[in-house]
Image (cartoon, rainbow, N blue to C red; front, top):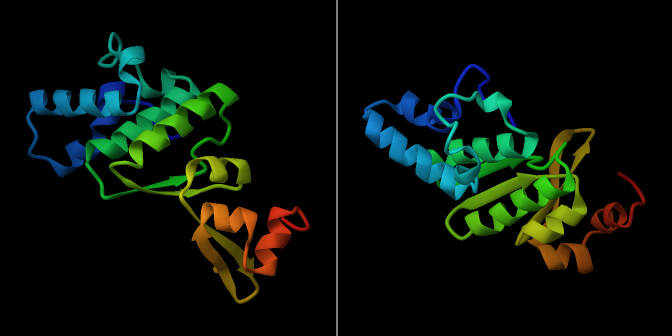
Length: 165
């Protein structure tokens, strides 16, 4: 996660809206609080959200702050690169629970090398490989159960079974 270290939790949550412009302070506060509630962070920061730096939060809280910042601008798609890297198991579980809640309202694309996490949080999985002529070649795309239980490509099976990777 990358909160802006010189900004408060509130300013981090509404940074994208500030870039858009045209929002009154009260509106920013309402949207910021709503986004922090959606990210399951509000109750942990409500007393300090205007004064404490986003960088003062724990790793899991910083990740949820960054998710709140994304949600504040009401995107159609949320892209996440290793959303649980460097988090402890408890923080990872909270992020994964949050992802399950968010996928009802958002399309979420996650990059992860953690196959167990992919099976827990994704509905569909794309398996990609770097090859000599192309970085990120799509090998296989299917429902997550199909990819992990009966992949159609041998390279997918080899990766899942630990024969390379």
